[in-house]
Length: 106
Length: 237
Image 1 (cartoon, rainbow over the protein chains, first blue to last red):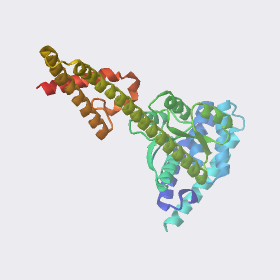
Image 2: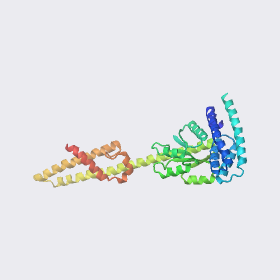
Image 3: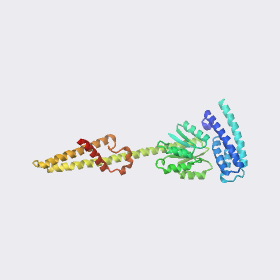
C-alpha cells in the first residue's frame, strides 16, 4: 500500500493485474521447468520477477530471479526446488493480497 | 513536463505511471521498446524517458542507441530501469547512451530525486538551445546591418563623386547626376526600409526564422541585392 502512496483504488487495480500475471506466467514457469526449456524459463521468470517485484516479497522475487538466472545460464539444476519455493510464496502472497484488498475495501 | 515510460510488465508500468502522475508529470506509457522509439521520434516527443532494460521487440539499450544516433532525439534524457543483479550491464547501458539508471524494484524517493535531476538537465539544455538561437539571431542582425550599411555607402559614393565634379553649364553631367540621384536614392530608400523593418521585427525582411540555423549558407550581399531589386521594381511601378 505504501508503494502506491496509500491509493486503495490503484492497489486493487495492480493486485488484479498481478493475479492475471500469476495466472499466465506461473504455469509458463512450471512448464519451462518441467520441459527443461531454459529460454522459456529465462523469459517467463524475468517477466514474473518484474511483476512480483512491485510487492514487498523478497523471497518470491529472489526465487524468480534464481529461475531467470538458471534459464539464462542454461543450467536448470535446482530449478524444481526454486520453482516450488516460488509457487509456495506466490500462493502466500496471493492470499495476503486478497485479504488486504478485502480489508481496504471494507 | 511529459515523461515517456517504456515497461513491458503491466503491473510495474501501471505503478510507475500512477506515481509519475501523482508527482505532477504527464505520462506517455509504452509497452515495448519499438513503441517507445516510434513515440520518441514525434516532433513534440517527451524530452525525458524512463526505459526498462529488458523488453520484447526492442530493449531499452537498443532504444538508447537509436536515440543517440539521431540528431532530432540525441539530447533526450534517458533513465534506464534495470535489475539489481545486472551491475555489469549498467556500464553497457550508460555507454549505450543512458544518462542515468534506477535499479528494480525501485525506491520511490530515489526515482523521484533522479527524475528531478533529469528535469533540471532537460531545462538547462532547453535554455542553452534558446540562447544559442538568440546568439545566432543577433549575429545575423549584426551581419545584415553591416551589409546594409555597405549598400548605402555604395549607393552614395557615385552621387558624391558626380556632385563634386559638377559644372552647372555641363548639361550632360547634370542629367547624368539627376538619373543617378533618382536611381541610387531609391536604392538608399529601400535599404533604409529594410533597416527599419529589421529594427522593428529583429529579422531581415527576406530571412525567415528557420534559416538562421543555416546562416553560414547565406550570401548576405546577394540576398540584399535580390531584396533591393524587388523593392526597386515596386518603386518603378
